[in-house]
Structure formats: structure tokens, C-alpha cells
Image (cartoon, rainbow, N blue to C red; front, side, top):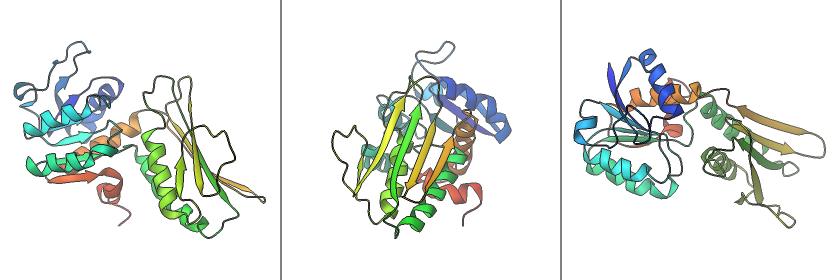
Length: 251
């Protein structure tokens, strides 16, 4: 049985705790200074009994937490987004402390399949310039970042695989958008847990790819799959890049 420490005990932490036994895992530590019944700090004593730490906090605290956890020699699964500027440091932390670290913009199993579908479809449209491409993401009004990390990842996939799109545009556009720009808009409202759409639009028709999150269960299941996969590894890993191996498919 894999023993895990939850760094951050909000809604995702509680979902992870409830599902952990289904993956032959047990929560042995909970660190969250704002949650009742949790330890307030990451220390040798508070995470000593765990095999791996799962980090779901905020962009403001994630790197300090990772530095502390890595210094204590524990593997890390990072669920917090906004790490694009820190990947070199995370790789150094993994190598220098001889531990595995895995990260993702979205651990949802369904969304990672959606990433692969988007890549495949974008390749099909790459030589069809009569189809314009755009995106939309909607999240609840408590989400701290915009655009979402998932929207950024989808945009990167599209730009990597479409010949006629060269740059992303996430902001409001008070002008005619350039043909080579890919517009991916964001909405923050209500209680929507996460909705992402990709539009391939022509004079003849529109094809829409869509993914909607119904609960945190898919995110938690992907996180726990990643946790089981990295325990005996070393280095820095991207969940999306390793997804096929992790689920035993797409080889």
C-alpha cells in the first residue's frame, strides 16, 4: 500500500482521500494551515511516514512547497497549475534530490484523452486553411487564474499542429484578429467545474470538440494513477507525455 501526504486539503484533497483506498493507497498526512485537523507546515516529522506527496495548493505557494518536499527526499505529484516558468527548477530539484516529480495542467483521464483527440484532429485540419480555429473555456467564479492551464495546453497542441496558426491570443481583441492568431477566450461565472471547446469553423460547416467536467473524480483518479506510476522512478515527468504508458494504452 502506498502511503500519501496531501499538501492542501481543500475539495480536491478530500476527493483524493476518499478515492485513495480504491488505488491501494492510504492518506497518512494532511498539511494545510487553513484546514481544521491538518498539520500547518511541511516538515520532516509531518511527512516522514509517507511514500509520496500530492501537492494541490496555489500558484503562490507551490514552488516553496516543492522545494521543501524535495529537500526532504519525497516524490512529488503536482496538481497545482501555473508551473510553465518553473520547469527547469523542478527538473533540478528532481535530479539534485534523486526523486521523481510529475506535473500536469490537468490530471483528468478524460481530458488527457481529449488532448490526444485534439492533436489528431488538428493534424487533419492543418492543410485545410478554409477552416478557422478558436477555443473557449468556462470555469466557476472562484478560479484563481485565467486562462486555465488546460486552455494553455490545448492552445499549445493546436499551434504545434496547425500550419496556419502561429501565435495565441487569450485577451480581449479590440481589432480585427490576424489570420495567424489563435483566439482562446475565457469566461468566469457561476459554478462550472470546467468546460473546454475547440471550434473548426468554415463557410460550409463547424466541427466542435468539447470536454465538460462533471466532478473532481476524474481529476483525482488521474492524480492517483500518476502517483502509483512515479513511486519507483527518478526525474521530472509530464503526465500528458507519459499518459499512454500510465494507462497502458496509446503505445
